[in-house]
Amino acid sequence: MDKVQLKPIFHKGRECIGIYYAISFTINGLLRSKAGASWSQTHKCWYVPLSREDYKKVCSVLKGRVELDEQELRRYLEKKKTDNAVKQEVPDPVPVNEPIVIQPVKTGSVEPVVQVHPINQGVLPALKQELVLRAYSSSTIKTYINEVRVFLGAIGDHPAATYTTQQLRDYLQYCFEQLKLSENTLHSRINALKFYYEQVIKREKFFWDIPRPKKPMQLPKLLNEDELARLFNSIQNKKHKAILFTAYSAGLRVSEVVNLKLADIDGKRMQIHVRHAKGKKDRYVNLSPVLLDILRQYVKMVSPAPKEYLFESEQTGKAYPTRTVQQIFTNGKKKAGIMKEVGIHSLRHSFATHLLDKGTDIRYIKDLLGHFDIKTTERYLHVSKKQLVNVISPFDDLWKGQNLEW
Image (cartoon, rainbow, N blue to C red; front, top):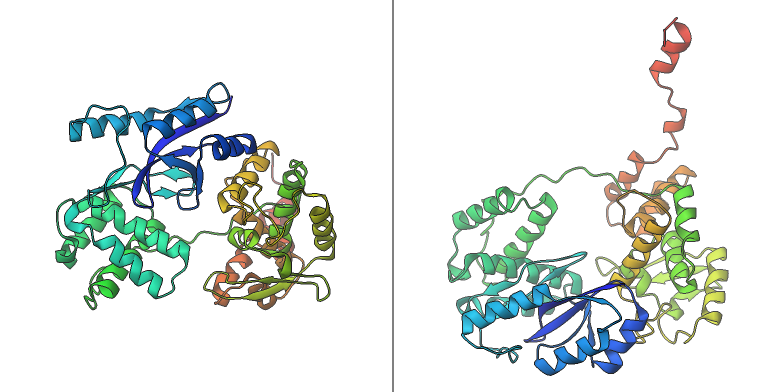
């Protein structure tokens, strides 16, 4: 029996019940039609308001169909009972002017509930406004707000605007030594804090004396051709298979795949138009004749037929959620018996590396991938086997030339 978790989240200015589970189209439809649930792109889950009535509707829909895990929700409610001395099963939504209680969500994991003190209540709205006015991408806005939110939760009732450079150095040291954050996560948190202090409250060169952790040199993770074949063959759903075929065939990011529209597939010029990709950069990539034939078959057989986006959600009629596509890849990888710790982005890495193996000029690969800097593309030189296959180990020569015993 599938497992469903009910967790507290803060969404659109009020407390809600987040409903987390693996892909299940049957439950999706029931939650939407019977419980009045809505989909949160921010939290990547279905949700209902945190009220007694909505809670009962969800339980009624899920009863007997899934294994229900309410532990985190119950702990949250018990804590609110203690804090507010209110003895009721499900509290009413929190007024907007109360301390914000939120549960930021990262891909594949849920962070602990974070409480922002009223003294710092204006920080996040001011940060978001500045990011929106500067036309930052939705993913960057989400990341920066989550990182600053965690920082505000850590400093409690200390006004963020009065923090000194030394206090921030101490905080970042705490993040590295006590919280064991990775170098990449630290970079993300520093970027968010730097934006707030230097761009929102205009403290120029505030981060001048704050060093950045050295990033580790990590090679792209990819799948070999045998693993790719097993992955694709493990998936039976035609839409799911077409999504992964498209990601690998054109070397697209998952966000680029889900945002493809029918009009972006140009069968005459044999090109795919990738719009507003990373860095707000448009580009054209080659359209494989094999992929074009597969997509034409897919559009004819899928029901309901897509109207705007190439891959549309049956529940919303809009673009497929990236989290759903990531789960499709994970399920296929598990079914194919692939043990490598890779995500759907490995299809893009595999595309680039396999092109290098076949002798494609790295400058063309750079343009296909949409990289700004050739150095980003040059990472694939370290994993391509094109030149390595001709390198003979000195041990082989020693074995052939000398009488070694085994």
